[in-house]
Length: 82
Length: 233
Image (cartoon, rainbow over all chains, first blue to last red; front, top):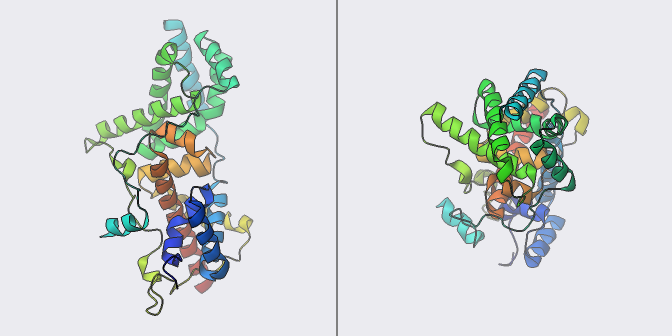
C-alpha cells in the first residue's frame, strides 16, 4: 500500500464529496482506483446510492386540508387588514 | 482526537465561520416573479400556488424543530412574516430559499422559547463524527481497511420500501441531529440543490456537505443493520 492510496476508512468519509463532484481531480482518481479494486468499498458506495434513492422516495406526503385552509385564512387576513 | 483525525485527512475543512455560500444562485425564477407580483396585489391564487409548492415541505421542516401541533403555528408565523416582508424583498435570492430561511429561523426561535433551553446551536453538530464505526477497520495486517466489510443488499428497492424497512428509514432520519436532518430533508427528500440548501440554511457549502454526509451515513447504517438482522433472523 503506497502512501498516496486511500484506505477504506478514508473512502467512507469521502463518498458524498465524490458523488457531489467536489473532490480534487487527484482525489477523484484515487477514489475510483480504490473502488475498482475493493469489494467492500464498492458495496458501500452502492449502498450509499441506494440509501439516497430510497430516502428520495419518502417525500410524498400531502399538506393536511386543515392546515391549508388555515394558511389561506391568514393570507386573507393579511390582505384585507393592510 | 477525532477532530485531529478529521483535520489531518481533510485539511481546510473547519466548522468555524465558514463563509456562507455566496455563489450566485439567487434570484427569483420566472414563475416566482409572477407569484411575487400576485402576492403583492393580494391575489389568492398566487398564494395557493405557493402553498401547493412548499406548504407540505415547510411543515415537514418545521417538525424537525418543534412538535407536530406547534409546527403548523410556525409555518403560519412564517407566512405572516413573509407577507409583511414582501415589500422589502429585493429578489436577491429565490423566493423559495428566502421563504425557508424565514421558516428555519422562526422554527429555531420557537424551539428555543418553548424549551427554555440553550438556543439551537447545532448547525455544525456532527461535523466530526465518523461515517462508519471504527471497529470495522481493525485488520491488524492492513489498518484502515475493512475488517468487517458491508455485505451487498440483494433486495429489490420496492420490497425495501415496503413495511419495516421504510419505518426504519424514517426512524433513522428522525433520530438525526436537527441540522443533519434538515439538510437531508432538503437535499434527498425534497431534491434541492446544494446551493439552494446552503442559501436557505445560511451555511457554507462545505458544512452542508459534511452534514449531508453524516446524515446519509447514519441512514445507510440503519438500513444495513436492519437487513443484517433480517438475514440472520
